[in-house]
Amino acid sequence: MHLSATSLDSLPSAIQTPMYDRTAHAPGVVHLGLGAFHRAHQAMVFDRLLASGDSRWGIHGVGMTRPDLVNQLRAQDGLYAVRVADGQGVKWQVPGALWRTSVATTERDAVVQAIAAPSTRWVTLTVTEKGYTPALGQLLLDGLRLRQQAGLSGITIASCDNLQGNGHKLQALVKAAAAPQDSEVLSWLDAQCAFPCSMVDRIVPAATPEVLDAAQEALGVKDHCALSTEGFWEWVIEDRFADPADAALLQSAGVRVTADVHSYEEAKLRMLNGSHTAMALMGAVTGRPFIASCIGVPHIREFVFRLMGQEVAPHLSRSDWADYRTALIARFGNPYLKHSVHQIATDSSQKIPQRWPPSVLGQIAQGAAFEHHALAAAVFVRFTLGVDEQGQAYALNDPQAGSLMALGAAQRTEPVACVRALLAREDLWGSALPQDAAWTARVTHWHQHILQHGVDAAIQQLTGA
Ligand code: CS2
Image (tube, rainbow, N blue to C red):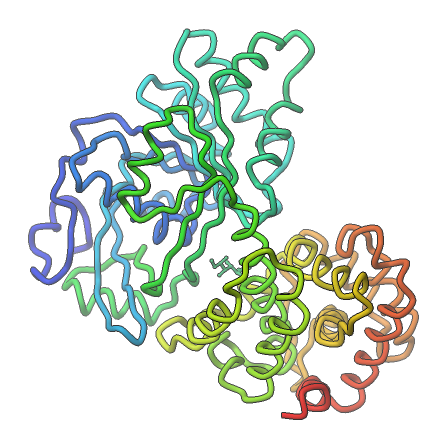
């Protein structure tokens, strides 16, 4: 027996399950990107709103890349268990907000129709950094055009990916998909739709067999889609909605609605995600499998502490960064989250631009040191070799894998040339950093140290830990 609408009643009573009707209403939200993150973050916020009696927050979830996952969720009637676990305790919950599912690649028309459905009030997106393609803009525009032609109201379209100014980027992408003859839909978009920026935060690793086993133990039935996450979650969204009344509703469910998302976005991208990428690459090269195994090493912990305090914090508009840092280090160490370093190292070429260069440029502008970022960049160069320090090969899972590996291949024999070639990539570092001789010199320095003595020795040398 597996988890489904019919087995819900047989679950142990300690497990929180949806008590509301999941079939009587049409979904009000279309979500693109049905990965683990959405299912343990927004879907749980919408579950709370549904539980409060507001039936407009059911989700039509769209799998962008994984038909297998959509099929498994369908077989379970959109139900899955989430283990929420940290130092505060462990509890299981089954959120019920996922009502319908589609696969973007094979059921594109169903997705367009869902966006255009009269009941739809929101579209939310977690399609990852590399998902912001012209095809995405076209998909959204096709649905929105149908709404406009049918005389329906505008909607809120909220990007929830780890990109600075994500709402602006998404709006620009949708508008870029429009042809000159689309002027009517464009003015309708401007007048009736809203593209708020938002910052979302919750650590939700891809499920492991251990989590699926624990789910079966806790539920008494099989759950192929179970997830594990931490208690902490945050969603900060710009106060810009097609229906202004949504602000108060979201607030009632614990969402922070504000005019200033920017300061939250930049702190999160550079402190949390910036440290994540550094640790993920260190873990991949040294052979440590999880973020918790990295932060548990005193010199890596010290590195992350200093990276955030010395090189990231001075350029943030958020002033409570010291508390944020303390909280982050505790979150990274959560023993329940088996957060694979290779999962986070995935798509590094798409992640680094938001996560590191703004802090390095800030330090350069103030004449301050950027040694921690230079060391992290050197680890990234070492990472492109595709083999760890124990000689274990690993795959680079990145749209740029081929070109990165080609540039980094000869780094043992031609280290200086390889570092230069990888640091010249404006798609990773932006236009200013590749011109900075001191940056290149320091990355080259740390890269040589890493090749000669290893990543751990380099970190120890820098931190004195
Ligand atoms: C991680 C994020 O995979 C990654 O790149 O840095 O998914 C991170 O866990 C989330 O942004 C936390 O909110």
